[in-house]
Structures are given as C-alpha cells and as structure tokens.
Amino acid sequence: MEIGSFLFAYETKGERMMLETISNFLTKVDDLVWNIPLIVLILATGIFLTIRLKGLQVTRLPQAVRNLIANEKSGTDGEVSSFAALCTALSATIGTGNIVGVATAIVAGGPGALFWMWMAALVGTATKYSECLLAVKYRVAAADGHIVGGPFYYIEKGMGEKWKWLAKIFAFFGVCVGLFGIGTFTQINGITSAVQNFFDPDMSWSVNVPLFGKDISYSWVVIIAGILLTICVALVLIGGLKRISSVAQVIVPFMAATYVIAALLIIIFNIKAVPGAIVTIVKSAFGLRAAAGGALGAMIVAMQKGIARGIFSNEAGIGSAPIAAAAAQTDSPAKQGLISMMGTIIDTLIICTMTGLTIVITGAYDMGLEGVEVTTKAFQLGLPFPNQVASFILMVCLVFFAFTTILGWDYYSERCLEYLTGHNQKVVKAYRWLYIFCVFIGPYMTVKAVWTIADIFNGLMAIPNLIALLALNGVVVAETKIYLDGLKKR
Image 1 (cartoon, helix red, strand yellow):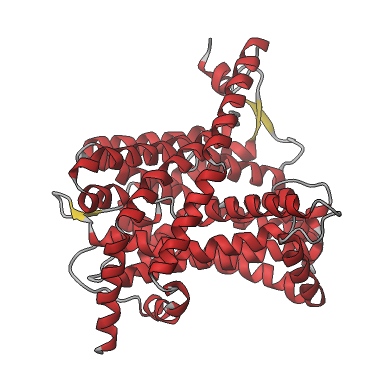
Image 2 (spheres, rainbow, N blue to C red; image 1 turned 90 degrees about the horizontal axis):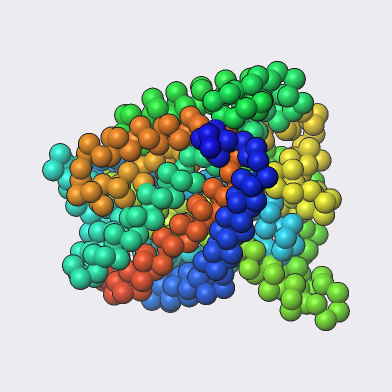
C-alpha cells in the first residue's frame, strides 16, 4: 500500500471502510472523554476556585488591567515580558474555534449556547488565574538558563515526586496534541482551504501531485499557500520562544482588533436588533423559546454545547496557557496570574461574544448552514460591503488566527517534550523540524479523524491539570494573599 494512498487518497473500498471504522471508533472515544463528567469537573473546579479566591476575577479585574497595560518586567527570572507571555498564550488560544466553533455551538445548541459560554468563561477565569500562578511559582531554569514551567512542574514539585507519573502523562498528551492535531494538520489545512475557497473555489487552477496519491488534483492556490506558510512558520519557530513571542506581540493584537472592529461594525449597523438578540440569547439559554415540554431538553443542549465550546475556546483548565505564563519576567506568581486570566476574558468574553452576537443578530444560525459558512453569512448580511469584501475580511482573520495557533502549540508541545526527555535539546530541535514537516504536508491531508484525535488528547490533558489545581488550591490562596497584602502596603 502506498503511503500516499493511505494518508492522502483513499483509493480502495477496503481502505475507505477501514478508515471509516477508525473514525467512528475515535468519535466514540471523543464523546466519552468530552462528556458530562469532564465538563462538570472543569466547571466544578472553576466554581470551587472562584469561591476560594472570593471572586477575584471580578473584584481584581481593574488591577489585572493595570498590570497588563503597565507590561512591567520585574525580577531576574523569565525570558519575556508578561504581555509577551500573554500574547504567546493567546496565539494558541485564539484560533478557528472563535470563528467556526462559536457558529457550530449556536447552530447545534441555539443562541442560548452563547450565554453558557459566558458562564464557562466567568468561572474559567479563576481557573486560568490559578494555573498560571502555579506555573510561575514552580518553574525551573534549564541548564542553558531558559525557563521551563507548566502543569508538569507544579504537579511534580507542588504535589511531590510520587506524582511525577501524572506530570509525565500530562506532558505526553501535550506533545500529541501539538504534533497530531491542533498544532499542525488542522490549522494549515484550515488556512489553505479558506484561501482556496476565496481565490479558486472551482479548482480552475489545479495540478496533479502523484506523491500524495494517484490522479489526485490540488489547486495551485493550496500548493503556493502551503509552501509560503511553511516557510513563514519555519522562520519563526527556528528562532525559539523569543521570536515566537515577538511575532505574537504584533500579530495577536492586530488580528484580534481587526476581527473585533469588523464585528462591531455589524453590531453598529444593526444596533436596533441588539436588544432583541440579547433577549433571544437569554430565553434560549433556559429553554424558554422551545416548544411546550421541550424547555428542559433545549436548556441542557444549550448548556452542553455552550460550555464545551467555551472550554475549548479559552482552554481554561486544559493546562496549556501556564506553559507560556511560566516564561514571564515577573517575581510575583499572583501578578502574572492576574495578567494571564485576561486571556480568557479576551478570548471568550470579547472575541467569542462578537462572533455570537453577529450570528444571532443576522439570523445566520437559522439558515441551514454549518461551520464557517454561518459566520461568513453573518458578515455578508451584517457588513455594508459587497459579499466578496466581507468574505475576504473573514478569510484574513481565519488565516491569522490559525497561523498563530501553529506557533503557540509548537511552543507548548516543545516544552512538554523537553520535560519528558530531561531537557534533551537535540530531541527538541529534531521535533521542531518534524513539526515543520507536518505543517508542510498538512494542506494535502484528508484524514478527518485528526481533529477528533486532537480533541481527545486535549481533553485528556485537562484531567491531570485539574487534579493538581484542586490539590494545590491552598498554595494559590496563600500566594494571592501575599500579593494582595503587598498592594495594601504601597
């Protein structure tokens, strides 16, 4: 069997049946991992930490904003500024899920899914604060001086050596998520597909690529875009964390601002529809718009879709953001925790809200469309521009969102691999080239199961991290008290 036949073009009936069986199996595993128990565990952890911290994500929000604006470098530890660390985390967090994921949740769960997304973000902010605080407190310096930290270290050092096996499980899942799904294949495939759909939807400029399967054609737009993006990714990744963070500091604010401005224009030009949209969201959240007798069922579906998508979007509790937070130049774990928790606010309460409002205001969720088509339709209906211009704006945002996710997840997975191999930089550098290779072949991949595999590993990452957060909640409270007492003395 040719490698091209298996990975890129399923030529025989037997291969198609085998891959369909594998896909169905993975879907069942994914449903098992991301079922009610894990969602409840993530929410319960957020609620517990919110209570323990006395609603810090609300009461100390002004302080978090001041810390973010100040962007101070304090202490000798760390590699990048607090703002750069936040942007690195946001580069991986803000992705296609903010555009496509929100649309999917609203189509499946109704407008009320957006309300439950807000609730997940509200308690998730306390989780993000806690995990990033712990990452700074328990971070370590490698032999060459660079800083490494994250759930694997606060599990090992905070909970004790006997829990090192749990830390290794987290790190293993982190490597798998980066290399086999969210970091590479899905993002580059999403970018090239978006570019092709805009510039060459009819495959007018196509060519056969025998290496990836006999008689399989790809648009020249996909090939050119794939090569250019691979080169851009390689140039950034080879430079390590400092180059990733410097690129993220430029791209993340730009892409977020561009998308938010476009969404705000839709809201402004349809301002009269906003109150009705808010009412629709709240009613739908509690099943009040469902037919008689179906209110409870509608509410449960809205909760499940909204909460699951909210968690997927902001990654609070997953354990990825602490890996970036650990590199911040700060001498106060709590201060970095406050800055890092802004990531959940920016990702879900701002960007996802913008997407959700545009979809509900324009009614695009109720037109029989799916995925990115829903958000595209909302932009076309809501913006006072020709459809091509509106589609182009959304395409550019998708490209930047996915590109930065590639960068962010390479950093996360490298740090996980570094922990697993005992800081073996030769292995890490070899992995980096493997990661770049996966980006190169990503546009030609047709294995839909890749997304499902990524979702499974992402969910499995959360379990060790949540155990550590619950076990170390006393440390979080103590560090928070030290920081707040210090503010009172100023």
